[in-house]
Length: 522
Image 1 (cartoon, rainbow, N blue to C red):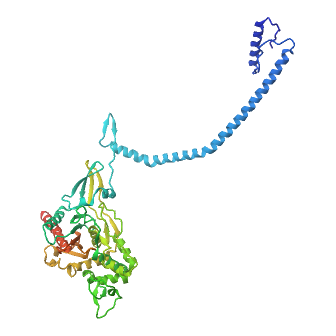
Image 2 (image 1 turned 30 degrees about the horizontal axis):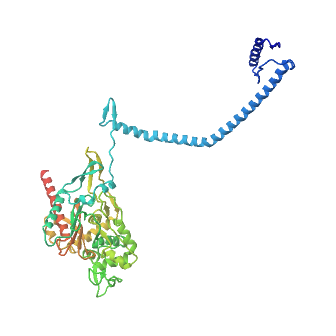
């Protein structure tokens, strides 16, 4: 312990004493709260007592500060604990999510990613040193894309089976399924009609299709009232008796009818009065026919009674839907399917069943679908015109696949309908158009059937005339269907069934000629 001798004149001694005192306090780990700044007066207590009081006060201050530190530290710990309680679950959840996503990537996506990267690098790239820049993958086209790109009017009367279109600043090369020999034959028919002054139709539409694949082989026509529409894809035309194919299918499959089933009717064949729809009776005023005869001759009262008395609303609606009426058909052609409406009125059921109404409408493309069902063992094909689409580099952006809309009817039902359709061209409503078929060097070798239909528009200014039919060789190795609509004006010109005959002969004449040439070369 240092001592101090009180002497006011000895300033050096006082400073030396203070320095020694501070050094001693620092060595003992203590600091005085106050530093003496001047010598103690002579009446003060001895220095040792004063120093003891200062040290006691300094200890109290240190304990107070320590307590404050403890309280502050404890508060911080509590606050941190609260924050961790709130954020830790979120953190853990986020970490687990990142871990799972990373695992999924490395398990599934990483392999595909590196595979695509390797495939891309193996192509033609722009080189910068040893680095290859991958090319951008081409955008493939869906059927919906093609429906947007391909305007129906641009697909009518094509003179080449390849067309070039521009979409989003890129050129697309479209290869169609058109048989240009047959397509040119249809175009020649249209050229001949253009020269007529009398009998020139107001509307004509011709569609030729493969029944098993849905490939459209030819499509041509015109509407003299509207040059910017494609009549082959429009569905504003009354279906007329073409709908009898649907009704007959329902009767055979749902009610067990056969082509030989006997039925009765009274009155005219092509009228439909309510008195003709009474319960079937065999009287001296009634006519007896088979279902096949009623189909071939398109007898309205027979099919009217099938609709109102035998089938009813639910069965008619079911089979119409199965054939594709009121359905969205996923084709690359933007065509309209059949439109069908049925009410709670039994007389309206009769009108629908025999096609004696203007509310059931179809397009010629849809008419080809109905006929194809019979020749395709009861399966309704989805029509297709586009074989493939490529860009300017030759990259394939779309490739056609044959598809069916429905398994519409059973194969046995389809065979029964084909038998009834044979009757249409032999003894029925198309017999005049197919007269002499058995003596024709081409048509005599074929199995031909069809269905006709006729009905005027609301204004009765146009009489629509239909023929929807099929043709195949006797072994059914080669087969096509046609759907022809002719809208006659003031004068009746060439009927739709005659165009059907001409198309059948043209197609199979070429087919047999090519086969004969192949056999000779072989």
